[in-house]
Length: 88
Image 1 (cartoon, helix red, strand yellow):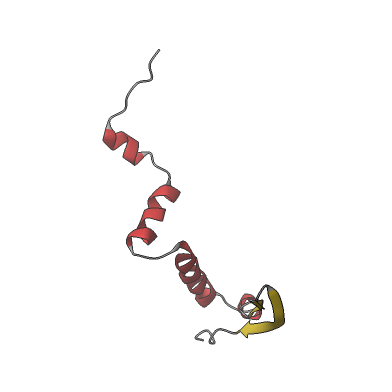
Image 2 (cartoon, helix red, strand yellow):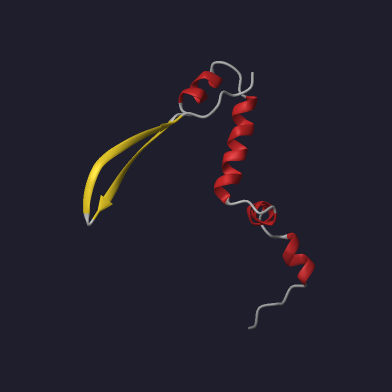
């Protein structure tokens, strides 16, 4: 038995919400990371205490980078990135 073919409008209407929403941030010219960061900023802006102070404590980011010269590592550098304060 061959599977029945569906008409095109029916197939579009049954697409998952995730598949539909992914197209919007791509159409806007955003990467997923920029989209996720924008969503996180909106959520953090809507938080009230005590959740707001917990979220602010997690905003600082630390990363370690090591530069290699001729295949040998130099001293590692630890960098701290602290975003600007959230509006109150």
